[in-house]
Amino acid sequence: MLGILRQRAVDGGLSTSFLRKTRSALVSARSYAAGAKEMTVRDALNSAIDEEMSADPKVFVMGEEVGQYQGAYKITKGLLEKYGPERVYDTPITEAGFTGIGVGAAYAGLKPVVEFMTFNFSMQAIDHIINSAAKSNYMSAGQINVPIVFRGPNGAAAGVGAQHSQCYAAWYASVPGLKVLAPYSAEDARGLLKAAIRDPDPVVFLENELLYGESFPISEEALDSSFCLPIGKAKIEREGKDVTITTFSKMVGFALKAAEKLAEDGISAEVINLRSIRPLDRATINASVRKTSRLVTVEEGFPQHGVCAEICASVVEESFSYLDAPVERIAGADVPMPYAANLERLALPQVEDIVRAAKRACYRSK
View (cartoon, one colour):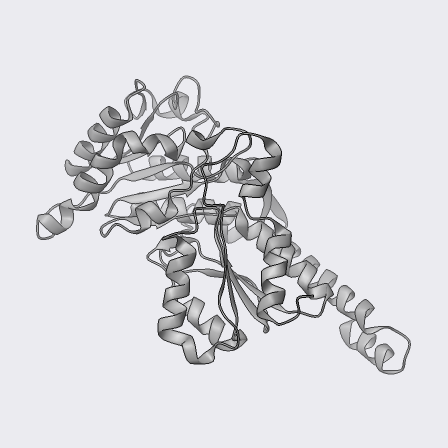
């Protein structure tokens, strides 16, 4: 079909802009057909935990309201009824207490999945996460593994204020001994959570509250109980040749929308979904930048010492001679999250911010 349209364009029957839009629509339809079924991120996470608990009796879930209430965000719905209170533990409101118990259980060979109602509350347990879970394998000369997953919503939601809106990706990604994952789609959520539960080391699994109810096309392969995504490998969500956009979690959707807007102006953007924050897929990032010669990095977290800063450093160190423009960083504002809705929007990256940065990098800004 595209060949016919191209011929008509050559003959003068169709405009170039019409051809470009038609091609984009056809490609979108083709990729949607490849994953005709849909699944919400919530159901993807729930099914991943359920299947791993079914496959391995050492896996258990613990956290506030994960049992009788079926999870604050219903991620653990149905698990108490299916596996009983010995494998689905409702804990008191004491992150320091139940996280310490979880780490101890992992020392003993069990595989806890610890839920934080929000990762902001993980601050109460950060000593166990870093000094106990992350460092034990190294300090024991490899004799002690700590197969534990710390999971829950991370970053901004909507109108929950400064103490419930912080992104901890850069915090935990700076710690040797931890693996840090941040899914975007339902396929990400299923494949990465399964990988995290099976991993012999502690994994921080950063979800996004606003993505839980979003549905995504999902392939038959991703629905298989053996499905698993590799830790440390990014995904190119959209190929392009003019500028590279790297991001993770909810911002992947924003980057894809920005790429659509850029395409209308003739700018071809490559969008990389990091998936894994630590280890970081530097090879994929640098390969893309060496192709496009431009980089825009995006995250919701604070700009100073952030994930964006680490990516920029990697590109400057490894691909500086390929750059045709300064790297661009788009991050959250360097302030605690405001409560007012209008100020909250100003404190977070928006699609138009990504578009402007990409145009600057391509020397197309007005």
